[in-house]
Image 1 (cartoon, rainbow over the protein chains, first blue to last red):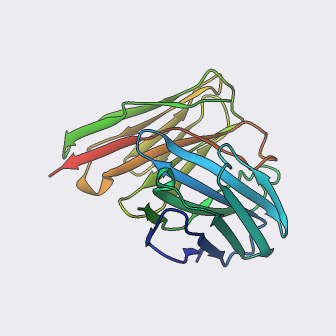
Image 2: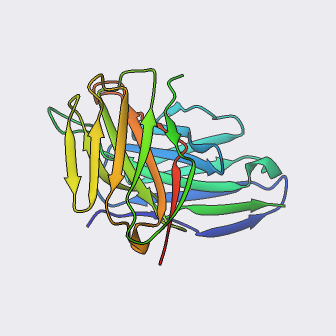
Length: 116
Length: 113
């Protein structure tokens, strides 16, 4: 069964702290994604990775960095957390589509981060 | 930036009613996906539509892709409380090779018993 797990469901941090959000997938997927989800704004892509040690900026990368040292793990790092980074963070993974198969992104349960 | 507009943003109905939610864009997508997200969980894929005019059915849910591949609709017949959730559409405009989806903001559906 497909599974994407995220290290924490809920997290409370203080402004200025360094925050690590971990995501692990067990499907041997090449692609991994980090989104944030905010009311009225929908899902916004922060970063994605299409291979180990490879990463590309999404639509809102400012204030975030990522790390992908192993295929199954994709980490999102908030170097210095700020209150405007309070949000729901969703990790997803997928395998590149081929032929008539379209890409499906499998999501983790999300981490709800509160920055005080 | 390609946008997907979903409407309505919120929908509250009684059990047994029918409903339709819409996903519209000015851009052409090679495929469009619908996800459902339940409270406290991540989105789960319901269906992918690829061909213009395509209709797919998933039990009481009917999905349609517009002829021009710029819009899609989701119709639910005889809604049940278990249908409650956030419905998201997501478009792929790269022919499947760019692995980046554009998501709409979603329709939050509440089905009251």
